[in-house]
Image (cartoon, rainbow, N blue to C red; front, top):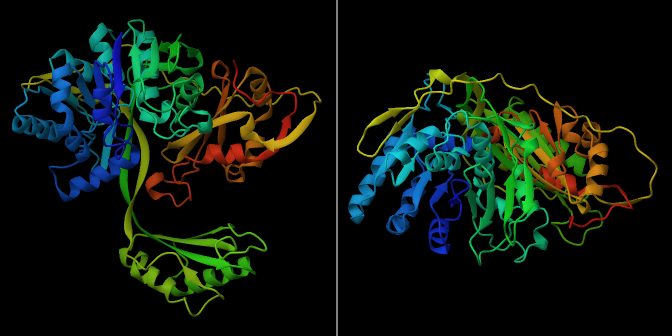
Length: 558
């Protein structure tokens, strides 16, 4: 097997993870994922200020502390930290290695940039064969731009085992491995619904390792002595993260999530097997970022009685001061009756303004809000000082033909290797929704939070959100599968009611997954939701009090 670790799940992850992973045990490859839809916008703005930037600068500082160790131990590094400028980061690594006196050979992958004159950035999600070509060409460090997150693992596996385009089951198995470790500690107990059951209470989970075999099967694990845990449930949680239906689309393979089998394989070891793959679609996803305008926010504290009337007064005053266009008012009823302290007695009125005019969204708005301090409701106070507007981005997704993208591996020394698109493709499978419901029978119930029987993991995909819910045992899943319909989700989470919601069953994981279209509007960068990335949506659902079947055990299956 090839032992592939991960040391970064996002731009801003634990700085010391690279050193921890290299010092913690044996590895063949160490990967780092830095890119998300929001990150691409951040890097695009960096590059507007300085054309030589556009990559994750943090990675260079991390690499400086451990490049020598990686070379000494024969650990190869693969990262998408190149962002919008992989050639620039590769050159910076060459300069770093020269300064440190290290003989590092650096390759990079390019071709993901799509020319869109009307966009701030547009990038196709490339596959893994360019990474493999760089490794085959002798690279110690491989830098990419926008590849799929899972490609960071699939590429090294291709290079190790020589898989071709038709080895679909193997590619699919490695894709699952890549999806599982791409978010770092999320698969080892980070952000886990049942964190209180972890050996260290979720204090400092270690980073994950995928031991990928030649047949595409994988064992998920972590270095001995690190925190968190690797269990079937922690792996299930990450497998449900930011996915849609059972057909998980990728540039190299469509991975069937409904074929994944998870089994314990010893302490902190979970075997992932049985994954099947089908030909990829003829198109690549393209992430497009544009500047949407400018925004600003002010928050009023409303304490005590007449909360709704106080909010209405502020609304009328702010609208009169700056006009109604682009204003959004969100009243969070965090107040409690008969409270003994100010905070517990207070609600929060969040006022957002988005506008193409930076001046109107800036001090003209925030100063108008502050001017109400002595001329509005009793007890008027704000949590924010007046400030200028900030630009926000809008994310949209598009597609381009696979053969329209010049996927190129640039090897150490500068040789350029074109990566041909897949010869065999297939149309995108039709959505396979499952409404749930069906026959029920009378059974005793008890009132309790839904989270006593289920875990959840939620996240963002552009303007959509996904919400994966898994049951802890077979009895709980038999109930969950029929009970948690789209209609019942709308009752429990009313903000989903007016939206289009698709539900998918994943019985091999004892799970159902919901895709909630448009919940995040124009994407994370433009969202004014309290939870702009829908990360807490699953925990909100678990906290709802419902009629639970009294005869269903609450614990994990043994």
